[in-house]
Image 1: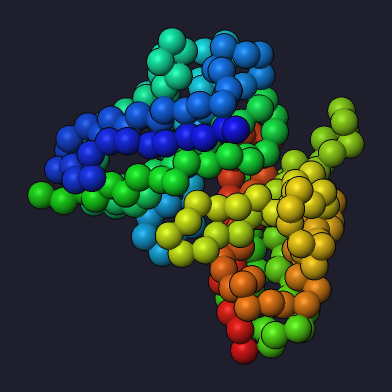
Image 2: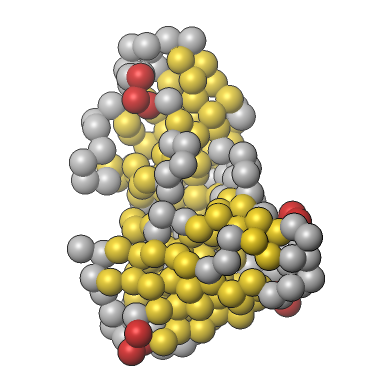
Length: 119
Length: 112
């Protein structure tokens, strides 16, 4: 059974860096084709894809946010970490991590973690 | 980037009636290498992550009621709920998953 869980701070000040961790089980990020991604959702708004990392360390980023994002993996801990710099109140929302097989749709989502950007 | 545009933004349908949501992509998501449309539909209820309903534009995910169906190809797609039930009240999103992901803006479905 595949599960994913996001963790990190609930409150971040503007200009600070956000670090979120996705801890997963039921699959290995060392298996060919497997990836973990991040998607966010501002309150009452649509879903926005942020980043993806694959088993071979191939990384993909949203073009509009690429300069602010870094995604890394720790296969031994079954974790993926997303960092996002220079946070702004418009970055407030729920951040989800997801499981993906290369070129496939998303079947598994974490429950999401809510992040508020405020001074 | 592929832009996904849904219509309408909101929809009120009577219980037992048909609900139709449209999704248009700014470029084709049908890839000739495998003749598949990289288009999925998700349902999201308040406080929950999205739930996969349809993938490859028309394949129903396991466990999804057969009143949900997807159709279309290339740039134009439709999600149809054949007989609306109370538990179908939610926001519905289309998504292309080739480049790698973009989502539509969502359609809020309510009971009339």
